[in-house]
Length: 400
Image 1 (cartoon, helix red, strand yellow):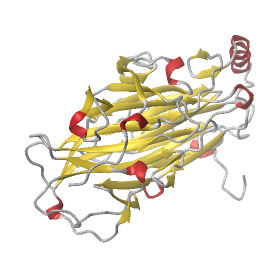
Image 2 (spheres, helix red, strand yellow):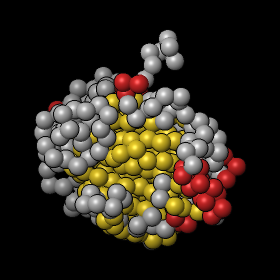
Image 3 (cartoon, one colour):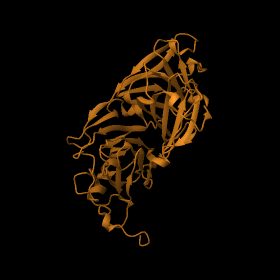
């Protein structure tokens, strides 16, 4: 069994653990679980503004899917609405996503995939699930990130990220293998009679695990979706391996009756906000060690249960590491998911926030100006010259 070489004084200081709350963002019966600002304040989460998590079971009357409107291409479960002054991502883990906006974009994307916008000076857009495959849940996140006051009126930008373009990394027992989400990675370089933990990491934004995420945010951030699996290596057939770097290490602790593995990751330099949202399962957060012994069994733990949000002090340039312990349990099938967690790390803006529904500015005067533009039909300032709410009005590419 390998032992970690990570010294405990590299660990970031845990500030507190919050709990996601239930919110109704549309003012109707539709609800989501909100990590922040419901569980963690906007000041603590800076530059992150909001993270909503939704998981809708397969149903013909799914309120987030386009299953009941005769497949009307102009119908969106979340109807047309304005945005200004921040970056936004809709990251779907299952189901089918749809998007339309005032820049003339109309997209349907498979999952796991993502649609993102830097809303800048303003967009109108509509969204929601598309025609969902049978027996498929619609599960995902909507994430808002603030931008500096001097960038809030930039021209808007947009991107769609299908599964093949969403970089996925597999990390296990000191080995890591980079792949796209359509690839498969296995490992036979371990004891065939033992269990292990595999961490599948989807890099959404910023640089992590040696790859760059596709979400082009204005403010520097790291956003990674980690899925933790207990794994039976005897059923695998590895074709590609790469050595792990120090900030992507998994190590096994065999000292306790219940075996576990410890996953370590270093937050990028210059980022002073760090949060972890456990949206599924449970993880043990290693917070400190009683002495200089690096054995994982000697470390103090905080249990992160489902819908917990951990907040660290990431201001110390010499303490960048987080460590998570994953229990193997009595037995595991070939691949059993034990937990899912989203990392949010970013550079604080430390600027005032004026927030009015889907508009996020720096002053109330800017909010009032935006509302006047909306009422006067001057919003958004950059848009296509045709009625973007009707797909039949979209010109052919050669005409537009």
